[in-house]
Amino acid sequence: MRLLHTMLRVENLEQSIKFYTEIMGMTLLRQKDYPDGRFTLAFLGYGDEKENTALELTHNWDTDHYDLGNGFGHLAIEVEDVYTAAEKIRDHGGKILREPGPMNAGTTLLAFVADPDGYEIELLQPKA
Image (cartoon, rainbow, N blue to C red; front, side):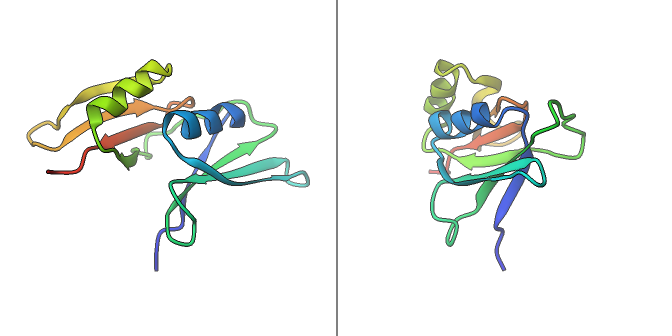
């Protein structure tokens, strides 16, 4: 067994694809419209889906707003340098929710950012 993908519902698919590709460095792996269901699916990731987990963005054509809810936590993405990654995201207009630094009561270096829909992304730097 393996984790195939995580799905997020997004309000503006083009804006979200731009964020995840241009700012977070993912590749758009595939995208398909489903006119009968009035939705579009886009799958993004850091490598081929046969070996890597993907992020599925779902855009329902007739829905222009979602409530994030209180059950979802965050996506976690490993970055080489959390300070550099956060600065790049800030430079591209991304929202920093927690500045880079050691986690509370620990030594793991992390930061939190938000995507265009407000979903939280934890940036984690590998331990030395």
